[in-house]
Image (cartoon, rainbow, N blue to C red; front, side, top):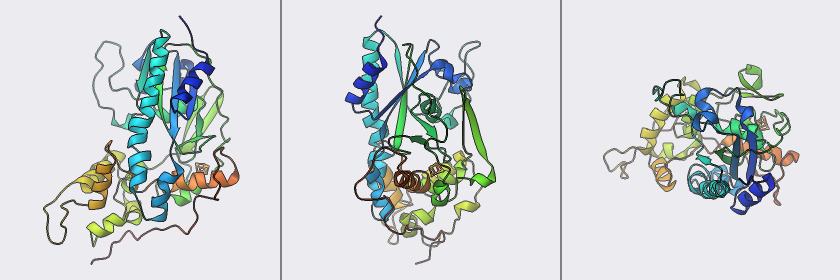
Length: 347
Ligand code: SF4
């Protein structure tokens, strides 16, 4: 059976529109929990190929300026980037691998936190609903390192990237791991730009993993606060709450919710409907969030727009010359940033 060289694999992947491609051998997952391990999906796996595309810098422009939200949700968050642009190229690459006689499993960038409690289907087997930790898989494949923000940072685009994976029995030489600290400079711009979910390094709340001889460490992000802010319960970062819920007074920094509880709170409020009235004729609880979610096509929406973990981070990394993609017209954050009060005035 033909085995592709890494050059052939990457040339084909890039020709399909992928922006990043890296290869891990299965040995690099030795410490992965069974329900996040690629071999729990495909026991004969020898390699995990992580592929991705950049998030457009311009996708955030309207949110940064406080004037226009749809670009990010529709093209760059969960909309077409994750659900179409990467997947089309990834699928063509899996076909290319299978054309050489090796099985290739395409893996969507799932979420291990939604794994359900289902018993194993066979004695001694791993329980179903295995989900790769896709960012860690990307680190194992030499695509990038984890930033303090818990976001994957790549040399070419910094945090502006989304990734999926292919698990295959095709043996391949792994790409070199990125030395921790190569991209993340512990500048804490992600913390100062974040509405409150990323712990400062002095708080000492961090996660550490070991891959071969390298230790990667990042902040233990408060995913409840992150979700409340990102998915539409934080009036400081959404003018749509101010329009639809006059009198609202909810400070997300004081909430102690789990990520799931935060989702349960945000989604019905952002996408649900109530009777139409003269005061609120659209019938949506928060009309602006509901429209974003509808236009997002693949279902999700990102109101807060990664203010600290992405926008502040790549603004800093670009200025420092740490990442490869550069822009001709100066830094991304060009004007004083906006932040609304969390207490919404009554009309
Ligand atoms: S802003 Fe980016 S580079 Fe700076 S500490 Fe946060 S993740 Fe690291």
